[in-house]
Length: 83
Image 1 (cartoon, rainbow, N blue to C red):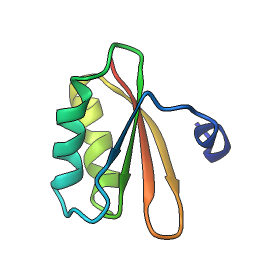
Image 2: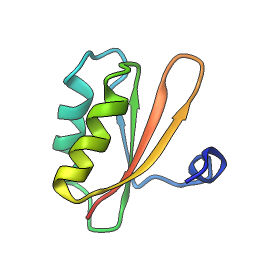
Image 3: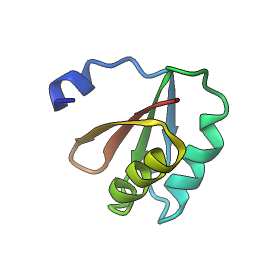
């Protein structure tokens, strides 16, 4: 998905993991995914660059759909859809 498409998405769940180091954002995402129903979208806020690698890998392993990332000045948002 393009950045423009991602910025228009209304996330069903937002996980704010800014300020936590790897593997904090991934662990927060793993915990929060259980609160979603299949097809719902989760957005993870993170300031740790490793999250851009960890979350797509985890999505691939678990069957969730990695949708993309949107960068802002001090953090970024990673979007995924629960399988």
